Image 1: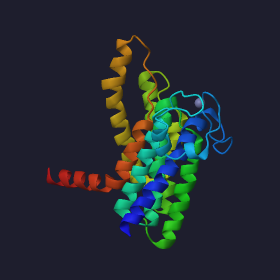
Image 2: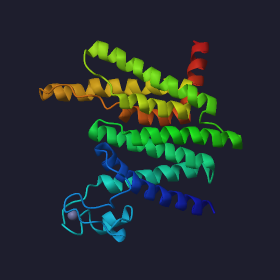
Image 3: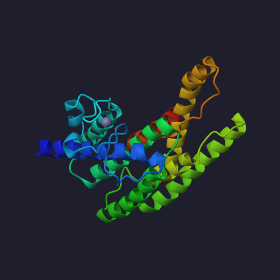
Length: 268
Ligand SMILES: [Zn+2]
């Protein structure tokens, strides 16, 4: 029975990942994710259903379009596999529950945000608005069941959205003053409203702290030296790439992190 649940979760995850690919490629260009049907970006030939099976079709076609023979990006099966693993991991930990579904959808949206942000330096409203509405609805549904943790209660979800958006706006404002250039896009603010609604106000602050810390280290240690070496202007920082994993870690382990820190302070 458990094996069946896990297999089903992985299968659903792979299909969700397949749809996520459509969102990742179309939303930054303001295209509909419903119409037209998937087609090869090079020869524009519509992709038949049997060539659109998650992961499997890419392997069968050996990464080439059936129409024009040109390569299909490994990003597509990569995203499908990653999301399948995310759904599998959620089902592994929480079984066939509402929490599994809630966590899997939350994580899937964050995967979409991180990949889109790194590719295009944008965080489409498609992810954040959809996510914000989903997270609020889920909080109310879970409140009826009486199950909440690790997600925020409906009240904390609303306070968390405002806290997350406010905190990242302050970080961006200070960053702009320090760097004397635009440091953060409005997409990061909407992202933190969505994340804050999921995790609540305390963990929203922790997410911004953890995400900004990872982002600053990666930017100063990796991105800045590379762009300086190439004599290029410093690029924008895709903060969504760091905030997304920070949100997941904070949601699952943030309470333990805060408790351990407080214990440490009390002992010191
Ligand atoms: Zn083609």
